[in-house]
Image: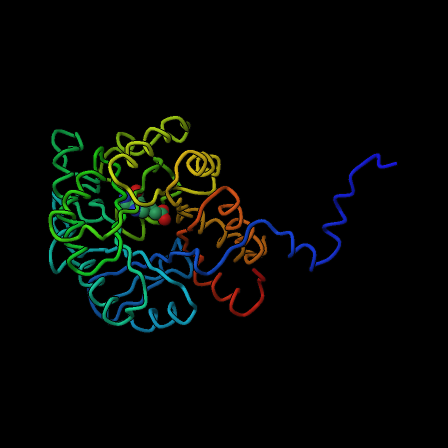
Length: 328
Ligand code: PBG
């Protein structure tokens, strides 16, 4: 008599485990973030993100070759400008650092799909994602600057615009701006559900974007809320987003799952800087097995419903897959 189920039959060996595996991490799922700084001869490791570097443009060629050889399809570009002002004008300058970087990448590595992060916080002297008046971050004024930023990134050759600023109405404004300037074909990857997270700490070191006063909680979301995430995603879908991002990833797998269940757009998980740094620190101490932990985490994003994963681990993962030390 069959009194209990023998689940172990389908776990008996490597072959059957591979055959019934439900989720996989592929190199083509991954988007690799790169940080570009002004200046020359700079390839400098970011102290809180071992293995991640600041590059000046003249040092970027080798890195691009490596990314292409590993088979990674896409990069997202973050600029670290040398000057900042109250309205973040380097963000939308024709020869701003990101615009120069996008042109350079499209010229040197045309096979890479280039995504531009559209925000102001790296470029404003107060470090907020919009202009400030009397301590208030001004939503609608920010939109005008964000549209200029997105259009200048498209003009530089960006294949996709990824606005991360969390101002209300940014998708509608940017969509209209792109459409009116000859870029109706450029998709928008909306950071639709972005929480006010302390996991961004190392990124803010890297991008020099820590707010000089206050925090981002009047525009980024409260980590305690999921219904609010549905409202954010709904408005971005209605405004014309092409893909929806959830950020951070690790502590928000339930949100990825709910976004996937409720919307038909591709879902992107941002495996943020603090998540990367925790794993790096533990593995450099010999406390965890880096490869196994990274792959377990990434397949967790896939299982939760993400189609794409933006991750600082992308190059390592692509290498492990290529070398065969991780079997897809
Ligand atoms: C810009 C932006 C941030 C990140 C990506 N784009 C920082 C922030 O919102 O403070 C964080 C990414 C990471 O931590 O890896 N708004």
